[in-house]
Length: 189
Image (cartoon, rainbow, N blue to C red; front, side):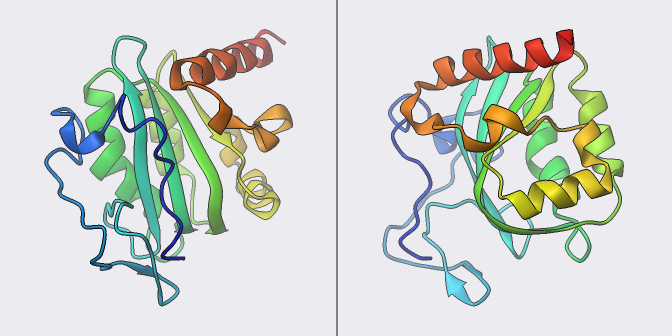
């Protein structure tokens, strides 16, 4: 797992450690010192820790004028033991929300498992985005199935084209426009 880096093609356009509004502003990264692990496997040092023992992330892109953020995840999303969504909400999302972000693109092909608790923080997050949305892209089948079983699908859009989207081929603003169009079509029906 230590070879799996966050997506880096957009780093010249946005870098969370250089964004004074980012929760990761000022962070320094090592390319050789591995300090975090998932299931006792070291992970690449470019992933950001936000208070979870098993889930790590990278803010790949934020566009304040358009109010959207692209977040990539790796690891195990565990609300049952670690309350990962609470950690995510309090340490990362609330900072972004305070700065006008209302549309969230969550990239999840590297999320290995999901362990549910209740949906309170998802509901809070959904209410906080007001006219915005939360979209899950490329999460694994069993994670989406568990989200549906727990009722999280009433707060987070996923399914259809969102489950097998080649998001890496897009520029971040193109990805946003494409996903925004998909969500708007869903909401129209």
